[in-house]
Image (cartoon, rainbow, N blue to C red):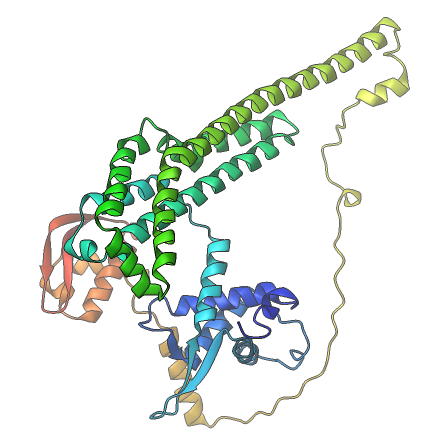
Length: 443
């Protein structure tokens, strides 16, 4: 790991901005064939990200960054220094490219998992193990370590880790329940719990639905691998990781034994712990509901008792007491009830820019260019009369690119322009385009 690899995300005042910029760079490579793109593309994507999120860099060296390109170039240089990316120059075109390093890719993927965690489908782990051992191919039989035992062990380990995380999330739900202050928030918490992914995930993991169907077969296959293919598995591991045979034998035995132990013992213990926490959650919810309800009754009783004393003592005609129960009836808003926000004083500074006067010919060209850029041939207004000329689909609709775009735009704005579109199951097509047949009618 390079020196200062985590500095951008740790001590920097812009650590959130840098994390987002790294994600924006990583996103550019999602549709590319490699982690190598022109520097201009990366710079432009950073400029767009900074503008869309209204980000201004605040640290030493950023005072003179006047434009978005300056800020984007500053970020690229900083990421190069941190080891997230590398700059390369093409020997033929001399164009600069940005390449994401392995460390940079790993960090970007890690940040993406943190910001958008993906909850696994737990029952798939068991099904994958079962199918892998049930339907073995010749390649798997020849490479039992890499294609059978190792992925089986990793799936079992991943399931164990995921179940522990699931158990921990229940604890967080219970802790939230302890701090609910009213019946509304308590009810919302319970509804969120019942409608959430947790209940469905748990129901697919209980004994009656999942693991008991496959556990015995998986155990038998692991025992068969250990008795019939142990030497081949050990040799695969020795060739793979260049270790001693004795160490490989110990590791293989440990992998098989730990997988069997998890399926028969640890799995049941974890599921029992989850079940116990579910019961705890329900008991706390009931107790919390009773406590909040009784608390409401107590407050209601205090109010009733106070009113009863006032009536008994005949103090309701007292002017001071009447003020306590008087309801405002002004029913208007005056200036005293409005808060006028202060306008922040802004610093003004005179600036001077060089300018030059365009010739008449240059003005005409510029005007024509602006008019051409502002003209949208596929606007809603221009599509109003399209179906008067073309009430149904025809080969002319897909004759060329412009006709196809006009048809799509007209169909898009059809409802707003007062037309109904009835699609057909048949298609019309030519050498380049294909479209479902349709018919237009007035509303």
